Image (cartoon, rainbow, N blue to C red; front, top):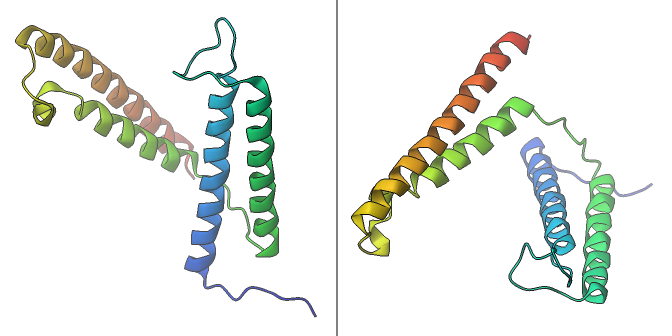
Length: 148
């Protein structure tokens, strides 16, 4: 007889969510590492790493990712399907909050801002906030017409 986990549903969801977040973080790290290679036109980061360092780090992260998938199977986690509307809503909410926090009135803790710079920044952030809100409206409209 093999061992089986005895999770409550909320516990299983938590472990599953954490393993999914680890997997997504590794994907982001790999994306960054792919853009950190020494060479012309490859610098999306301040530091450029030698290819052998990147290869070694990617190997380590792939092993970590594989361990996470092994645990997923070991604990019998179901791998729930992602609700695309819920994820989009969360991401758009995060974008809205970041942009709002970048408006001059929210940046007072960083010290006084040049008035002209504040005016230009306010217009730019307002435009980006409006775009995020427009995307959110489109997502909500789509959700209304596609949900059963």
